Length: 253
Image (cartoon, rainbow, N blue to C red):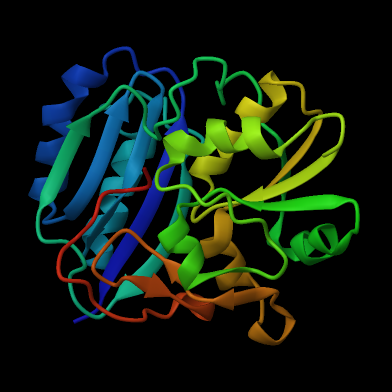
């Protein structure tokens, strides 16, 4: 059996996120889904998996059903598949942030960098005056990255601020093109840079996963594989799964 997998997120005000936890758990459990979803004041983030019809029914409810009352009208979605269930259980967790950076100035609901479609990404990162920045953790970068990208050498996304303070200068690094697994970390990272004096910030729309899905391997500037936070471990071009981990991991942190 093949399972459908959906990585999703949206930044947007959810002041009632605590009250949404149990109804969301019930909705996913009723459709036999597993995975992890994070809820916070600023939105929703996570990855869930199940039979294709059940997964799409839940996604439809998230976008159009009464639970979120139309507030997930701009849900960022990336679909892939797995030969085995990539999660052991269903977890709905409450968080301070759906991706942890720890700086209130980084608010994607107010400002983010310019989105770059996968079709335009190769041309952007080939420009000599562009700093190409991988915003992921060091173990993810070790599995694969774009040619010429800067590795921030961080162990968690919360350390991104320290990297910026040490290594980047808005007076010198005028054009920055950043990327991450599915796009969510770049939402926070680009908002952070804009709030701290950087003016020309770009990020790959849909992240690496969308690039690997949309870009023919012959045209690709990606090298290696993309780590994903479930038991598939990594995906390659065409979102082909690479292997199984011992246990499921959390969504991007």
